[in-house]
Image 1 (cartoon, helix red, strand yellow):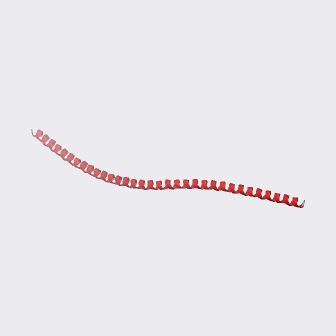
Image 2: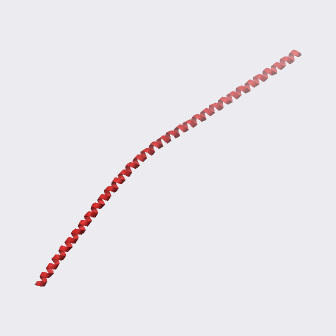
Image 3: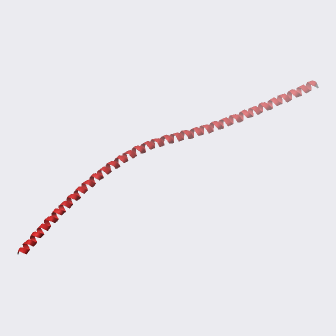
Length: 123
């Protein structure tokens, strides 16, 4: 009976060891699955970060291009304003010349009218 008890105790110990090994294997399997899930999540986040970095780089390039375009537009605008001011000055000069010519014509017309009236009065 003593041998039988030892054998039963050994069987219980072996069964307990097998159960514990099964539990350890299940825990390792779960840990491995969690590690794979974590790796997948990490890769997904890295992909998103890379995509955001690419978007940021593209945005910076676009910003630089827009700044250059804006500088060109500002320069063209400045040149156009200068040209318009020159045109305005030219138009003002021409208007002044027209006024002077009009005064001269009016003066000549008035002179001719006076001369004509004098001639009419003399006759």
